[in-house]
Image (tube, rainbow, N blue to C red; front, top):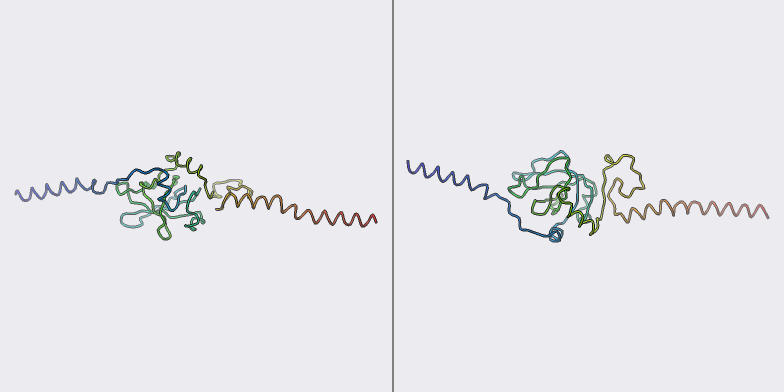
Length: 201
């Protein structure tokens, strides 16, 4: 009888200790450290397709909005959709994935996917306003807006659909709106002046 009670008591203690065994513990870090420790930093909207990635991990696809770091080292982000893997729950430092919400993601590259945790600083975008402000001051490298969310968007808008550097977009816009019309107009004007001058002779 005593042995049975001891076993039940031991099992009870084990059950009580499990939440503490799997409790997430993050070492405090500054934004600068989170930036340094991340391969990719972006904001994005989580599609409604969160799935089980492995026994203790879940994954979700994000529609990329803005990129601050890692577009060169993780070119898959150019598609506008990236897969991010995290822990299945907060007990193992997983980020809470709620479809159709916007997030700020600090991630590591793991093959064709990105991995993140609550310790890396990833969280809901509206809860990371100070981080976004500091990142914007550092300078975003790319903007990405889903055409489905932009009604009446113009191809001259440097925040239009697609991934590109702002500088590249502005340069291409300058060529398209200034240099190209001048290049077309100059030969026409030159020929017109030539024929007028010739007819007057």
